[in-house]
Amino acid sequence: MKATMCSMLLLPSLLWAQVESSEVDDRSKAETDNELVAVEEKDEPYSPEEPEVPESIAKRAKEANGLFQQREDRETATVNNPFVMTPHKPNYFLPFAYTSNPNDRAFLGEDSDSESLQSVEFKFQLSVKFPVAYDVVGRNSSLWFAYTQQAYWQAYNSNISAPFRDTNHEPEVFIVTKPKHGFLGIKPEYVSYGFNHQSNGQSGDLSRSWNRFYVDFLFETGDTAFSIKPWYRISESSKVDDNPNIEKYFGYGELNVIHVIDDYSIDIMLRNNLKSSDNRGALQVGFNFPLWGKTRGYIQYFNGYGQSLLDYNHQTQSLGIGIMLTNWL
Image 1 (cartoon, one colour):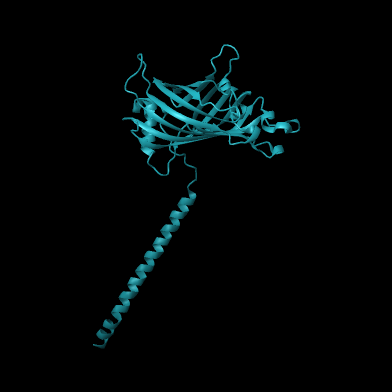
Image 2 (cartoon, rainbow, N blue to C red; image 1 turned 45 degrees about the horizontal axis):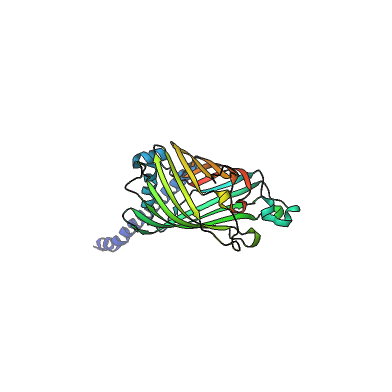
């Protein structure tokens, strides 16, 4: 009887000991498993993972039934995302931009006798836009605001404290329409009507600015897209005009052509004052190609007048190499 009573009194203790022992064993096993996993993870070689690569330009255009349409579809998909800024013009960085004859006199003034600009500089462009309203002048029309900044940075010129020799600011407001009918059998895919102000934010002798109204006709055929963009300069009095006769150097409009070859594209910009005598203008040719993820390589050549506002009446020739973050298409 005493033995039975003792067994009953000791039974809870024995059961508790077994449960505690079981928990200890489980914890030990879990710790051992974790250690093994950690060892296995350490043994696995580490390698960076490339960001998701977008489909080629040509494939996107084929699926969307058009070069312009594929861009519009992707802009529409992200335009309401508060963490996404919609690109306007191409965004790029050219750490190596060589200019054959920098405009020392315009930037340095009298100091150009003792100081000089370097031929190699850092050029970049940042351009964004956002919608203000839809169906403003009928269906399939929209009102936009955009801002573009183009900078020329003497990043490697420590002798004069690596200044930005010119920074061009270009805010603009425009309405985009999709015409239903053409004229004389010619129908553009889109027509934009806009106003833009362009200046370099300087004062005194370095100040450059002008205002324009423009119409931009966008066309597309196969793997090629192009736009014809005439403009009209709003005249200013001679007292406040920072750059008289700028239209004689920039011309009265520009032609842009973009040709796509699979995931490569060539962009061409042409300006001209269309005068037989004293003819002036500019040519810019760019080539971009895929690099890493969404990043693209970019090579840009320019020859003519007006690469920057400060150089509007100075002929330059330059070649830049770098990366492009967003393309026209």
